[in-house]
Length: 87
Image 1 (cartoon, rainbow, N blue to C red):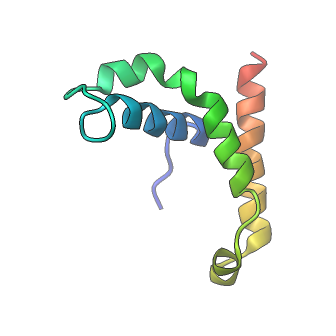
Image 2: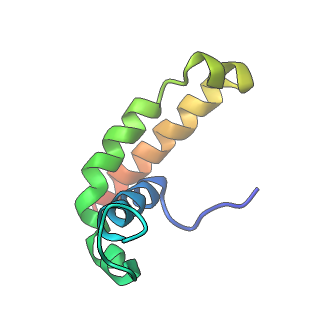
Image 3: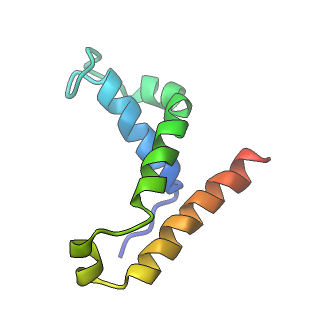
């Protein structure tokens, strides 16, 4: 399985920024990459809120795998972000 070099919070924040900025989504920038690089930090709070919501898997997710592992993985992502924000 591929493993990202970016934190999960950063990846979610980048997606949110891209949706806002890119003409492929809700924005008007046909080449939003540089703007996303600059502005993704503004979406960290929303990314954290999404992750907090995802901590508990729904019934379908729990039936597909180990719900305890899922919760620990999401908590780890939240804890990484907390550690990074304190630096």
